[in-house]
Image (cartoon, rainbow, N blue to C red; front, side, top):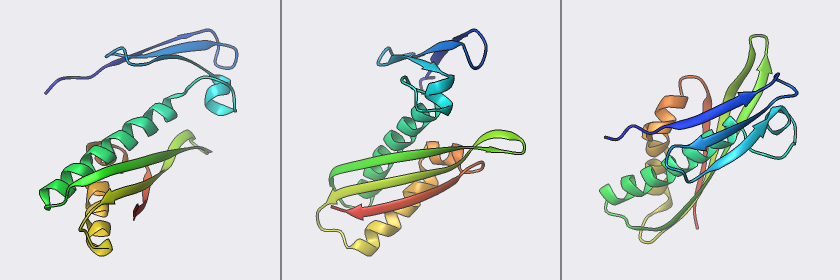
Length: 142
């Protein structure tokens, strides 16, 4: 399996500095800063990139799970909301909310719920993040 990479550069102090993040495949390069991470400033932040990775991984994994169980999804839309909170030990990602809407013909809602929950536990990004963050799932059929 290939090894994936990304690069980041930070220049300056935490609050006044600035940075650039770049995906190894070249599909994204963008600025980040203190204000884009901890306030409402423009640019991206690591948590947004984690959210994109989780949403993408979950959607693909759910498609695979549905396929292995005899269902062909037409569309799967997933949003991941990553919560960065400050506690006594500093900042940490405490929770990720996955919201998925899927269009799948011929599946009963109870079976879809079962497969969606199974996918939440077993998608590679969920398995990485679950030990440190609560992962919730709101999955519905469109």
